[in-house]
Image (cartoon, rainbow, N blue to C red):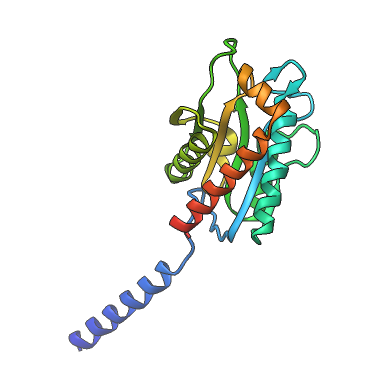
Length: 213
């Protein structure tokens, strides 16, 4: 009788383990997160009264949105599902942003920003993360954008942004270049700098999904 009871216990253990292993990974807040494969939530930083960095007539909130639309077009051309936290010049709180991406169940979140400095010669690429699962995405974004824009890569740094803390999916803030840089201003005005950045972000996302399907 003892052997029969032991056999039943072992059978229950293995069947339960299989069920538990099949469950989607929890983002750490008690919710079960089942993302849409290959989907991307694009978050154009700033907006409305929150203008971000400036350089003469260039406003970061407008540059962020333009790059977001360019990236969206590239992703959708390759049949990715894309969500955006804003599509016009409106203010969005951090909660608005991460709640939208979470509710849509996007697989990753890319927040588009551009750095600023009082020194117009400063220019480099960096990416920000908060959660451990954000790091691979942030690293790929920083490496790809810096390489394709031919800028110094200052790597990734942790940053306590509500968008990064509260997002269910891997997320990063891309600081592609310094909007306040004089060379960047001329490239935006007289070349295809924003298209180049959108291409780099697209390639980074493609690389990430290939490594982390």
